[in-house]
Length: 303
Image 1 (cartoon, rainbow, N blue to C red):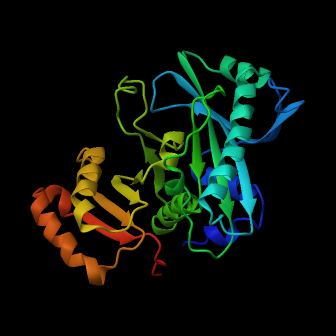
Image 2: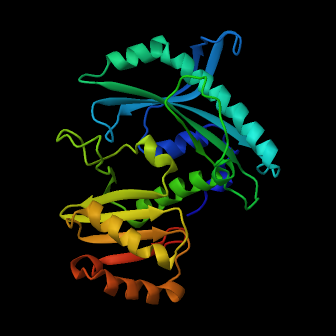
């Protein structure tokens, strides 16, 4: 596990395509040119590294159009806050302009015509800003929390994926696939006020774009009559947050799972098992905690 960082920058844009395939984004349209509607910014076309669309299970009767851009380097992220902000704003503006042009494109028109019973359409972006340096500072998102961006461009939101976020998604999916070979793996779709209709799927093969910046990743694994709920978190093991994860895993499983696995990036049984057992007693729901397991998804699997 944890090999994602070694691949970044070695195989270009295909590393992102490989990650997205793990997340269920199949048959992505890559390297598309879209006629620019802002010729002062981009004279002729906006280049798009990737385009994917799907029927969003998180919002009823809604098409999700996702335009993504890939930015790579063999060097670490900038150390200067000003340089980080300025570089991000440049990347952001480039992608925002591409989405703005996409909104008026024939490509979008044809995509929307291919769906039935649709009420809404969102056009969002994902910016992959990655590098393959050995620098330990992999987190850009926290450095950009208070950035002010222009609202002049027309789009429905842009997500940033840095090395930390990409490694989390890659390592989580790789662990699930390796640890549970032969199981059918779905993403669990949280119920919210926008997807209450009976026609909405409660789990499926496509990871919604809303999850790409989430601190947790919920999976449902099934094999014959066995069902397992797996909850991955990007955050380190913390005694104070453990009950929160117990509650989330219990709720999304609806007491239908045979077992539950909560996965941390740094869990150590020698240090944390006593804490886990104490919290299980406090949770006071033995039908859930008896079959609850905690693992480290960055540790090599024993064969």
